[in-house]
Amino acid sequence: MCTSHDHDPGEAPQAGAGRRSFLRATALLGVTAAVTAPPAVTAEAAASTWRPDPDSRRFTLAVMPDTQYLFDGPSIDKAPVEASLRYLLEHGRKENIVFLSHLGDLTQNGVKEEFAAIGEAFGLLDRRGVGYSVLAGNHDVKSSTTDQRGATPYLDAFGPKRFAGRRTFGGASPDGYNTFHRFTAGGRAWLVLALDWRLSPQGYAWAKDVLAKHPRTPVILTTHELVVADDTLSDYGQQLWDRLIEDHDQIFLALGGHYWPAGRATRKNAAGHDVHLHLTNYQNRYFGGAAMIRLYRFDLDRGVIDVETLSPWILGRAAKGLNELERQEMELSGDADRFSVEIDFGERFAGFAPVPARPSRPASKLLVPGTVAYWRFDKPVDGAAGTVRDLSGRGNDLSLVPVGGGALGWSADHHPDQPGHGSLEFQGFKSPLKGAYLKTVDGAPLNSTTFEDGYTIEAFYRLPADWDPDHNAWSGLVSRTGTGGAAGKTADDPDEPLATLSLSNDREPQWAMRPLNQQGIATNWGQETPLETWWHLAVVNDGKHTTLYVEGCPVLRNPKAPAVGITSVGLPWLLGGYEYGGKIDQIFHGRLGDVRIVSRALPVTSFMNH
Image 1: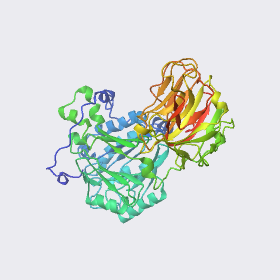
Image 2: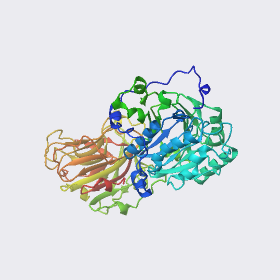
Image 3: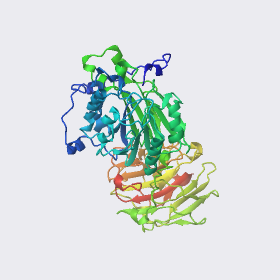
Image 4: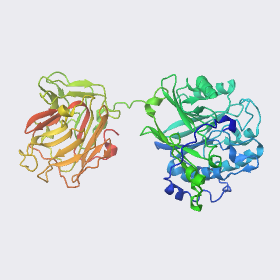
């Protein structure tokens, strides 16, 4: 931050550090072994030493706040900053570090000698081609000026010419004090907007123009002053919100330093979406913050940003023995220093960069070699005696069977990766039994197929909010009728059907069947599947063993015993129905999408959801 008078001396000190850092510390023993810059490398070598994975859905943005006390007149110590930058270089591949943002106040007095020292430290990144941004804080320039101040030592050291030719550099405002940078991660472009300590009207116009020229790109805004305390913006931070952030939905994360202790705020923008605003600054702590860095670990699949704060310089000194303050400061665990931000990225970015829905795929694309049945529900089943055609052309058509006056509905709702864009709505109820289901017609070839060489059975399903285990548990998605007793297999319960892909009272998918090579029932169990969510199931047998997959992931409870084929007594298969003792005992309650049966084991890459 600026000067000590900007901080309220009555504020409580920041929470202490965690003590779980031994492994990290021992891994960093060499971080500060040398403080001299490594030899320059060619552009080709730089590209090979720092190249984040642009497609991985897990990546890290590094943030470095106020380093001013490390570059203060005759008191200059580059070692902490160089340790942090070396950490980024050494852990770049493992952490998939895509970019570093400095939040301003690089120096204390903004003079040439201070900038020469920190500029030399950042040469570590320059020589490796690492993407990063800096911005001027109030100590780097005359604090009473805006970005129209003209030439300064800051601009000489960290102006646009420093970033020219770097693949992440997007451009700068005409004055040179505002820049934007781009990186690719998670298969898409992201933009960092690095703004000066004080924007002029020209600066605001430039920033809005950058956003307008990148209308589908999510933006991380960095500036020196923004949040002053938890849930509170500074006066200038409020100005930034009012003039820029609130009306630009692309800005989902905004980061600043200047004040202490660290804090967070969340605001709803004009589009009704959350914007996360963070204050990061540790200059008040041991060794001027010891060049603390924040690691923002994005996980697009989990919908979360996990945030961690640490000092590689202190961690790297662990082998030499740490003093009491160092032990407290090497890794921070306070609520404002180590936390997670939950973001549904698809939903959050839908207003400016909606993910296009996957189009319906023609049935012919799903008829892989060995397909013996393929049913999809692009339209309702017609009438009480309606049928559903087997699109494989093998004649395994389905006929509708109502029970207790029940009916079968239809919905355009479907799994986002389902080939067909429709589903049947089963409305089963246990007592009294009511609903409707489908069964293969008499004489369908599938009725007698035993799959000695293996099989793959796939189905998409979704359970509604009113699914009740007392009335809806153990209904079958796909099942083969005929009992174990009728097939002469009396081990276990002889009244159970020969095969059923069902849902337990805990909504766990279960594949229970009688293989040709054993008397008893072989069972594969999946985990609980939440309500109001589409799921894809696949049961794969390679002729010897069976594996159940949920969303393309193998489950834990897959039996190791050999299981060859599926026993048959020539009776129909059911969709949405479950028989016990040769009679309908339960009817599915929920939506059922495409169902496919193939007479061989398919790899995950050939499943219908790929």
